[in-house]
Image (cartoon, rainbow, N blue to C red; front, side, top):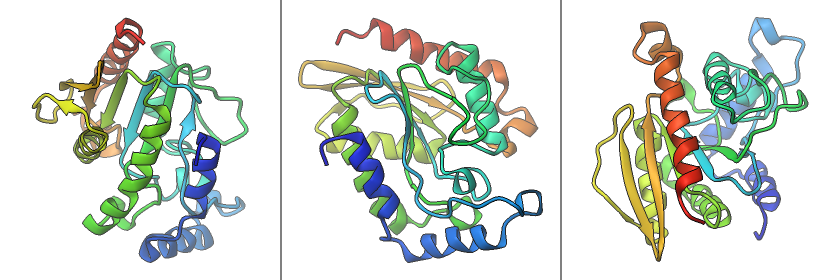
Length: 232
């Protein structure tokens, strides 16, 4: 695979994790009452955004009635509402919402992907499913690495996946524990990268106030600023 378009198509065709494929299709058939008249995507969801990103955002996995319904990462659920609204506020998204694949949304220097590309039951992929899907993240990194300067990990599992992605590519990464606002530096050959951590914009975090709009804005604004300062 030499392009992101080819990678995205291959991800959509992946059937490596039968449990996840079965769950995605089951959700698509049963549907939530609010979406009973919609046709769900019902399968692996590819990344979304710039073909030459300076910022790579890594989430956990598609939501069962969000990206698994719409076919676009972080689109169609409350987590996506928070993420895209924040991206828009800091100047990285054309629109403050992301509702479906044909809504005209465009990201500015940003690509959104995930550690796991299929919606998992209970939002909990198994260790084996994480390991299987890691190869897709690694291939994606190879294609975007020439332009990416900042990786933003949404949640602890995405942080772990991002660290693994960078280290498997041969990068030296400074030690840093995950936390909101955490930052680690990575060096690959003569190039430097920053890895930033943010709490995931899940309802569990946003409803309880563990993650506020200003907290998410601060991380994404720092990613924007660092991506401009890092030399190409």
